[in-house]
Image (cartoon, rainbow, N blue to C red; front, side, top):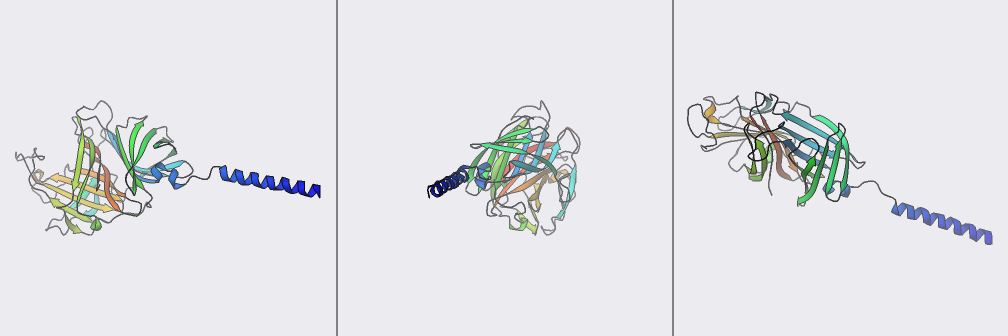
Length: 316
């Protein structure tokens, strides 16, 4: 009998030990451990001079989707443009048919059109408090700080990198990658944000807005607006000091195409010259709520000319 009870006590102790190990052993990473508790981010980052400064190094922009995985790995799908390389434009296939007889094709930066595949990069990530460090496989490193501007989104702000990034923002949620809002359902309201840009002379930055309140719905996948004359168009070939601006917005999933140009630049109904071409990605909340866009500008036809920028426009 004594042997029986001794054996039973040893088995019980062993079972308790195994239970304790199960309780204290680290569990697989859960959603709460992702940056800000969320794993899919729309991201814009780049290297542009500080406000008022000339360029002293490379100027470039990148637009991306970041996918964090519970095993500590990360995948990036991205589009990249360098000011030192001629970018040019690309046709999106979407037209402004239905906007008061205005029928033009919306353009975007080359290699962002709907048929253009994104490039990919893989790496690993770690978090410490609200800070996330990403180490990409080709050697670049980024550090981001997470915050919660609204209940269904996490915001990432770039803290630093080892490859010259000067500005970076990201907005992420638990929504799947294929969740998006059709252009026909985008609320026509004001979206506010920030920008950091380079105009081929100096850097400039500050608050920004994308006001859709006066846009017209051309079709199920296109919006357009013709503004009042503005002095932002001060380089008209006619010598005029102002001109209306024509705006377009079209989309293909989360990938959206924002373009605008001064109408004084051409006597034709449609312009095929140096417009402002701004690739954008939609910012979507946990339950699919549309919040706006994060994007870049890559507008040049000749190397070392034109406008490059990073920006975001959101509804909060």
